[in-house]
Length: 363
Image (tube, rainbow, N blue to C red; front, side):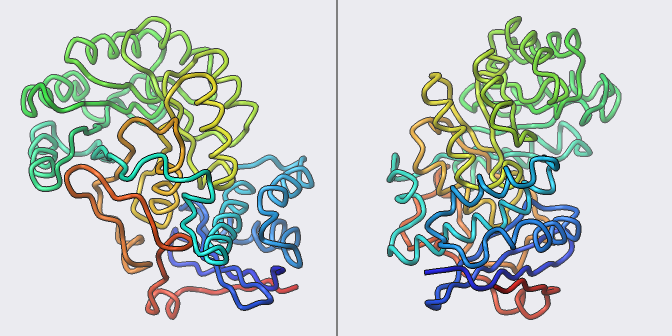
């Protein structure tokens, strides 16, 4: 079996990848969203030539060779493009074997994956946030939720004056003691401010505190983690395996959060999960939308022993992710069943394929 064609289908901020082989198999993957045009350009110029004519079963080795070949360009765009091709190869391998990707990754470590309802909004008021999260808890059985505090990379600036202090206490009062609450700062705080916010979270019994400080500054995050009892999490923005190794070794985080689309695919995210397992810390992969990345992350979380906590489930409806694939996973009773269909177990919708902008690289 060899790869004969790599096609991208772009619509807005989303780029889906289709890989075809000489024996008629086709796999679907996806790059990380946003700036899709740039990612697609990198994919066809720098990534596709390294995969065409090669055996899809060598996916992990091909990813490694591609990243080493382009060692002078260790960029987010390169890793996003690699993830698009690599995730499609896993679909091919699963279909060829007649097995879900989760089983190829090591087997089902769990029969269902618990999810937490993840808010992506800082514009919403504390009152409205509590109301909509309460409705989702009642309707879909979530036992854990996450809110946004501070402002992304905000240098101690809140999205609205006093919002962080107001939402932390209000959510606990509104949702009660039986829901695990977490908060995401998206790198918005300095060390002193992050510690003060972390102590507020501890006072109100929150479960974890995500990205308290700007993500490149591991030392700052480590200071926060050392000062607090609440678990500190991070890693979603990172794509360097040595950076993840440092992050785990120096205990700058208590929960590690690789993103399949950012890190360069499933193989590399799996390596982070194994590092976390060896170090005795949980892995909760980042997944901030309901694109195909949600499906990939579900397979990874179903297979990895380190994925012991509820996983991220965005509660936002984004127009650019709608009408792309089916069936879309659904939460019931706070969990999603572990995937059992071959490959990713989903297909692209004909309307998306018809309307997307297409580009093809051939052997």
